[in-house]
Length: 267
Image 1 (cartoon, rainbow, N blue to C red):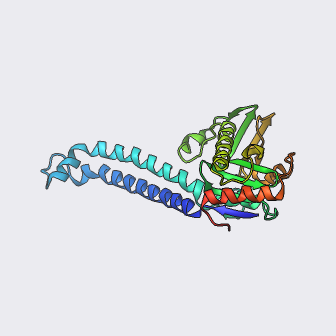
Image 2: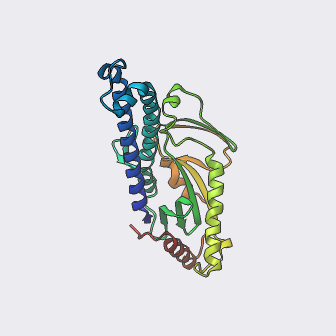
Image 3: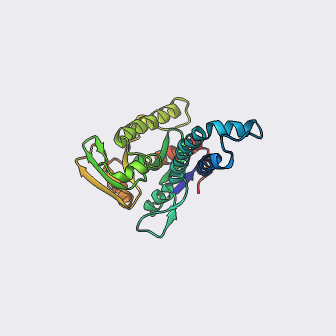
């Protein structure tokens, strides 16, 4: 299997997350310093300069404002780090990013398969194969998720309150999957119209699945509207796709087109 990964974008967002997190910690530290100002600069004492006078008058606003802003920035930074930085996963000694876990789960396929990771417009995880295209919506949070038809729900827990900003959030992965599949279809149609894709875009099957990469996920499924699997079972979903196989020439044309619009070299 060939891998087409936009590593530059992944690293850029990982670094952004780390900078935002460090910035948030710095703001929290400034707020902590402001909270000590009544002891350092008593309000009844004359101020040495305008800055000290301002801190004397508004130290409480500065402290509480820094607490809120620093907490928000630190959690937003953690969100990026959890999504784009390598981390240790529950019940595993491996340190990896979500895209690396997805790649590992699909190892063993030959070079007719092309996996596009953060490299295609409007589609984060895409697999091109002799069976057409499969789009994956990936979630990395842990905990319990209940899926009934097209309804998604996470039962309430106290822990979710403290991780509200760091989590990706469940949302509606089924709807996101359908929207992403439509965007990929439009991408193929655009390639056909400008003659960059040498096959009929309408003949390319597009399926997909919602994939949970965290081993600590507890999936409770009741006839879900779309395939929903832990990452360890993803290969079975790909192999079990009951579709007409594309000719080898069409598979190559499909992968070549996606590679051209991704502008990322194969790994």
